[in-house]
Image (cartoon, rainbow, N blue to C red; front, side, top):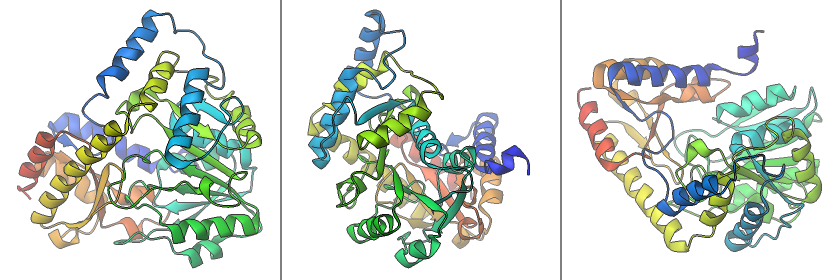
Length: 381
């Protein structure tokens, strides 16, 4: 098997292809999930001030003390989770590095990692880097709820890690209390490590995000991961973090130090200040993105798509079969030429592409006028 196949490179290939098509055709790009606006002015000014003050050399390997303290304060403020910033917090080069380091820390060659499918493509790559075997448990349209019986059936004597993403990309599902308790029960019964990707924690419009680490029996076995990119609209800064028990954080740090060692020196103090912003910032962020979600969802529904309204994240999933199409890759390759819009086919997020074949993902983290332009162009279909 070629390296690209082992790493499940189709998702990355399609993203690159769609981005190139967007440029070549002048299309509105609703493919990749990055906003077309910068974060709060105070955040940007704090980073500039840090650069000018000389914060341009290697920061401490675990992250600057101010940011580690701010992350600990954030976890206490929002979830009543108490962490020692010196031993239970690690700053990483985005959540992607945190996920890779956690998998390298806890997965040995031949170990099995259960992941919720469809999944972010770096999960497959991270598991492959560690020599593990990914075992999907599929969230199926249109509800995308977790089948706990299927989760239990997926566990074997070789299972080592549960990789849980909630709020979930690309479906927008937020796991509820029953699902989270079910995951907890499986993890405790089989003595599994749980890696939780929570980067969309503040982008929840319906329901409530609750970290798995808050459940009884999970504090010492959970690697909690989040980042600043989505919350503060600075996806290019790549500032993420890990929280957990001292043993968990030390294990992840051991792997992380040989990936990037450290990064983002002037961005770290800026993110530390931003995490302390008042509830008005977080409330306004959610309200703004929810209005964009609703704008795009209504427009796509009016155009004939079957819309699966997400409870969270940046993304809307649609079924294209009501428009007479059955294959998402073919549809997305046709879309830039026919309508001047780019989207992402769901099947690139699956091991078995069939459940995702008629599904297409659209990013709504764009300015309202951009979304309206995309909808106007889609009328050509």
